[in-house]
Length: 264
Image (cartoon, rainbow, N blue to C red):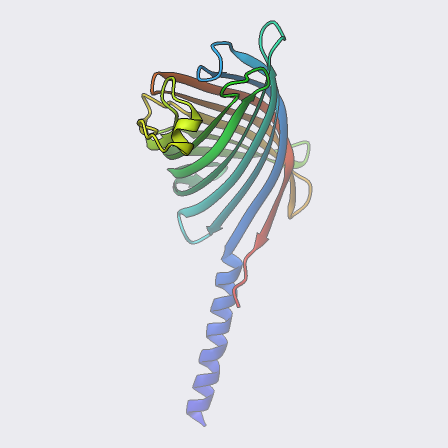
């Protein structure tokens, strides 16, 4: 009888502990759309610089435990832009998708201020299509990057609303990317199989990609928050005697939800 009582008490303690642990596991998910200026240069297609309006979708998922200094982050970013040259005689369409997976370590989490450092593994693919070119009208791209990253946040109250101001910066370290060589056609690469240094190792010198986010969260309820801010994405590379850059400055708006993860 005593053994059964001890066993029952043990099960109760395990159930309570599991419940507390589940409550400590939180997921923060945000979905944002943005619009703003985009400029592009790809010397494989044209020596001209193109500029216009671009659109961005950004989904951010962060998983954390209150008893751990480590956070896991996943981000999906899709972009599309309609561009024109300075004389408005040529048009380009630009699009891309990027996935970011990272881990952050909390260096500081005191009162209203927090600071995290970590790294992101970034994989992406995209294209630029020049509507005027008859020969080689499009340029495809793909890359994988390892990017050190840092984030800071400050929590405060304004107009009786909880606010959170955050900043994130991502910088390149090393990676690889696909690129045709100067004067090489896609027909040579894919139909004839003529490889000419098309998979290129990159560093922060040859492909100095840079991304930053400045976001303001405005609390609407206990679980729902509005987020507005700025996303600056600067992708550039100089490989195989070709230059490429895509700069976007987008104003973002969206919602943030925060909920518990309960494992059964």
